[in-house]
Image (cartoon, rainbow, N blue to C red; front, top):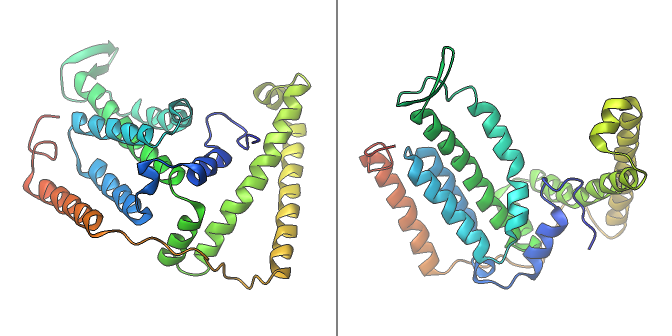
Length: 271
């Protein structure tokens, strides 16, 4: 299988699809709607929770679920780099002057233990969501994702999303081939952009034009095979069982009650 990602720090759609289609773990067998509901629950949890330790625990739990699905931790570490750097670029402006015990002083800027906990909380919020989103995508077959998208999203937004996913392979494959050719000739992306930015801009522009041309040919082939603006999912979406539905309902009710009553971790305890 060719690596379709042009950077090790960007999720590879080929690898994601491979794990989703061939995985046989218990996490893969969980109903797709249940996993989507748990993603919504997790987003609510990291939004409402105020305890840093609770957020770190939620992040650790998503990593455990990710690993239980037989997914590679090395790839998760690489793919988490970009969101972590993005959060850190914002955190570096927010951690100074937070209430707490001083740890580091740089002139008028003071870093406290409260600032460190704030940084950890923001990173845990982001990476917990990223980890479980990757778990959902890498344990749910494309046929189920397509069916779920057609049920949740209105037409033609669902068609745009599904076709964009399909053409993502074409675009990333072409850019990956371009970078492979650059590296095989002794070049480098960063060094090349700094020294010959105009040439690289032309190359990348031509790559996307070629990707668009290939996408156009795929669209014509789909029209020739009967596509009329609607992808009809051939495989029905499994229905969640009563036990799974009850468990998800209890999880949402418990989270809402904990937030309303101010339980520890939701405003009623230590940070």
